[in-house]
Amino acid sequence: MTPYRVSVHIVPRKGLLDPQGKAVTDALHTLGFAAVGDVHVGRHLVIETGAADATAAERSVRDMCARLLANPVTEDFEIAAVVAA
Amino acid sequence: MKVGVISFPGSNCDEDALLAVVEHLDEDAVLLWHKDHDLQGADIVILPGGFSYGDYLRAGAIARFSPIMQEVVAHAKRGGPVVGICNGFQIACEAGLLPGALLRNASLQFRSMPVTLRVENTETIFTRAAEPGAHLIMPIAHGDGRYTADEDVLDRLEGDGRIVFRYVDALGAASAAANPNGSMRNIAGVANETGTVVGLMPHPERALEPLLGSTDGLVLFRSLLAGVHA
Image 1 (cartoon, each protein chain N blue to C red):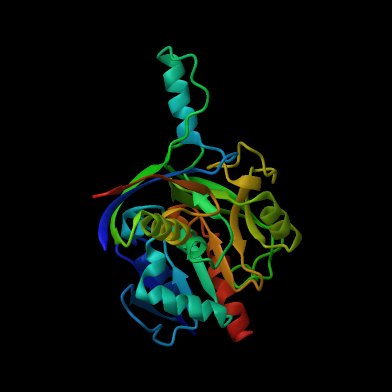
Image 2: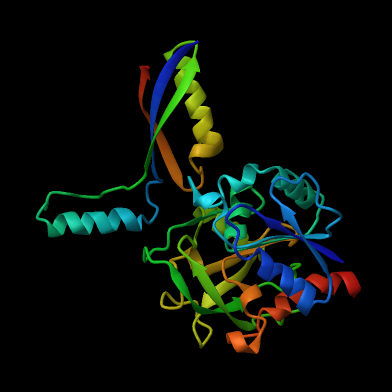
């Protein structure tokens, strides 16, 4: 087993009303960042886990996302990074 | 009849739900700790309001894994009645007992205020004593109450009559102005396929005394008895 740090982004599902994202977008526009389109506010998790290799670490975290970390009704997730710790 | 009210760390409406049963229905009720492994013979389970496990990760997401919830899910699968109020509704959705999810209020504000509900289905364990279309006034107190589901799920719920409560205005219109949290289709509560599991964001246990402004919650709690003593 090798220790890995796996980073996950969890964001509201596309198309769903994202009031936090909208509030941040509006604030950025107020600050003059006129080029900003949509902002999506989600969660970033860093999971330290042991695994045989990077592929196994990612597979394991995908399973965690499906079963607990993301709500499949309202959220999408993406694995942002898998690095040996 | 015996009602089991689940106490999670962070539940804050469990005592109110217990009192609703004991004082207003004159029935037996027991608090069940989240680490318990049996329902102590409860015929009906109430998942109360609060902030179980600090709402960490997502409201209701962690509570679903507590030992007592395995018993509650088994009870529901046997056709046992379960009522989820506020955080209890969020937990029931996370546990897969009810469809959909409750997201951050569209206003981003915690809303604590009375709302008007229209009873859309009187064939559930929590509404069978109510008149169809009745308007009930009771408080909400939540930051994450925006009911959300896929459009095809919503259509199916609509078609099967599983939308139990809607937020309406004084004239009975399910308008945007009457919707306190941006819930899709003004949904305040839904039921499972058999009407034995009901979840709602408003607090009927806080609408039982004239002093508190409304007694409209009584008819919902009385519904729990309708099948038992009928």
